[in-house]
Image (cartoon, rainbow, N blue to C red; front, side, top):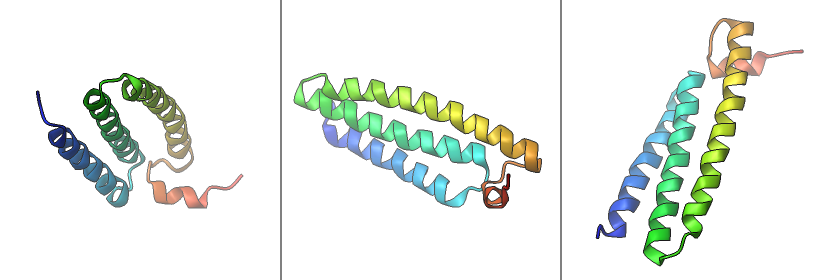
Length: 100
């Protein structure tokens, strides 16, 4: 059996990579990928604690998180398409200049 500390270390590393990606990237696609890394790090924690405690609650919440991630990607890609159509670029700093 793998100790829970290994899962927590993996989750912390993936979460740190996701935070680094959000703070340093200006491309909207890379921004969405970083958010997905954050959600996957949370999923690893939920499943690891679920296995550690011997119940399925964490795995159930993990399924809900996956559904939330799929919805987030659908909305995010729609926003990226509007950004590209209006500005011919997917730079997230340009979104502050959007007008009706």
